Each structure stands twice: as C-alpha cells, then as structure tokens.
Length: 75
Image (cartoon, rainbow, N blue to C red):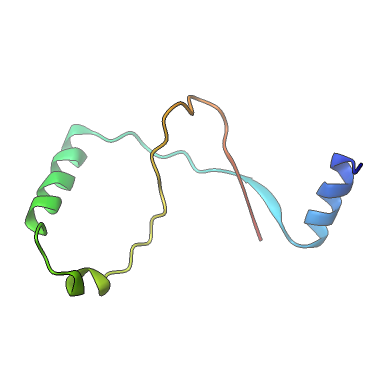
C-alpha cells in the first residue's frame, strides 16, 4: 500500500505536476456558422489535402462532465 503523499513526492521529483485544465469558451452562434461554412468549403477534398494539415487542438466533446474541475498531468 502506498500513500498519496508518497506518489505526489515521486511525481514531483520526476517533474510531473498537476495543472488545472483550461476552461474552453462556449460555442457562439457566430462561431458555429463559421465552422459550418469552413466544413462545407472543404467538403470533398482528397485525402492528400488533409495530410498536409497539422491540427494543434486536441479537444474532445464529452457528455456528463458537468461543472467538475478537470486536472491534467504533464511535465
């Protein structure tokens, strides 16, 4: 059995910290319209077109999270 304090000290020594996840703004009707316009503009492009893009956001949509604080762990 290992205590939480021991795990915390080990992670801190390894350079891994707990950070509060950034709160994402709600999607406004204007942003939704811009997104659908973009999707329709690029609909039907070949696979090669998409390989040249680099997506930087790693967001996902999950149901049922509510207002709970989310934590992330990284160095």
